[in-house]
Image (tube, rainbow over all chains, first blue to last red; front, side):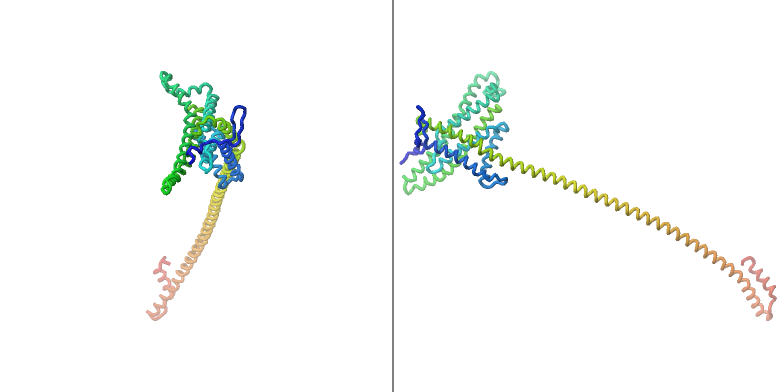
Amino acid sequence: MASPLHQFEVHTILPIQIGNFNASFTNASLFMLVAVAVITGFLVQAMKPRSVIPGRLQSIAELAYEFIANMIRTNVGREGRPYFPFIFSLFFFILLGNMLGMLPYGYAFTSHLVVTLGLALAVFIGTTVIGFIKNGLGFCGFFLPHGTPIFLAPLLIPLEVMSYRFRPVSLSLRLFANMTAGHTLLKVFAGFVVSLGFMGFIPMLAVIGLTGLEFLVAFLQAYVYAVLACIYLNDALHMH
Amino acid sequence: MPQFDPAVWPPQIVWLIISFIALYFLMARIALPRVAEVLEEREFRINESLRKAEALKLQAEDAVAAYEKLMVDARTKAHDQLRTVRERADAEAAERHAQLSELLSKQVADAEARIAAARGQAVAHIREVAVAVTGAAIERLIGQPADATSVSNAVEVVLGGKA
């Protein structure tokens, strides 16, 4: 029987070697491109009628748009408007990454720490750069909250800097751990179904329940990721 | 765990960058503007309709105001006309009344004059009748005709200045 971790393995489909660097097209790469294709294809296809009174598909596309637009409006405000495409792409890339893993023979590329860390670093570096562009060196004041007694500064500034630097770590670890744990758990219970024979219906019920839970987690983690990105962006734009 | 095998990191990162940048540009340049366009178009249409409805409402209010003004005008005009008609009728009635009472008082005066004349005539006749009756009564009493002149004098004495 395959190990429960077998599903996370990366297979090379098309080996690409640039100098010493391995840039091979893998099954994970394939599902990343599938996610991009599904999101773009869906939105373009759904918006084709361009009707004032939307049909079902168009309603879904508009709901997706409004969902992210509202998220930015409540967490960042009016100044968050230019970053809307980024947050939208981020949310749906992660959502599709999580959801594609729920399909049989699918692959959840968000179960790889490198991938989630890569996205988190994009958010972290991006928000830090935006913070310095919008506030200049005044952004350093972010590490000393207003009204703090000055003698606490030597203690507080390292703490704030530390917590700020741990943002991408917590952001990426949360998503990676949720997806890996959920999918491993599903595989483990699914393995019991076969090995327990007649009594296999008990883990079977567990797998059914867990599958529903995994769908919830897949949505929720994408949402949490996008909301946290919005909050970091808000910190960068408004410094609280 | 395959996730912690450093050999798979480079391809993962490379394809993450490629696919995410591709997704970002597809969203920012193609997909999202289409959604935004439709949403803006809808908002524009809704606002336009609201504006039109507002204008129509104002028009309706104007029409109602004009109608009410017209009604008030018509009513005051009707009142005015009614009053002039009534005044004219009153004046006419008063004039007729005056004419009638004048006529009546004239007739009354005439009648009174006629009555006075009749009464004078009657009084004048009474003397003759009294003389005749007295003569006839005396003739019955004494059996022969009385002297007309003395009877007349006697009646004159009795009646005195009464007639």
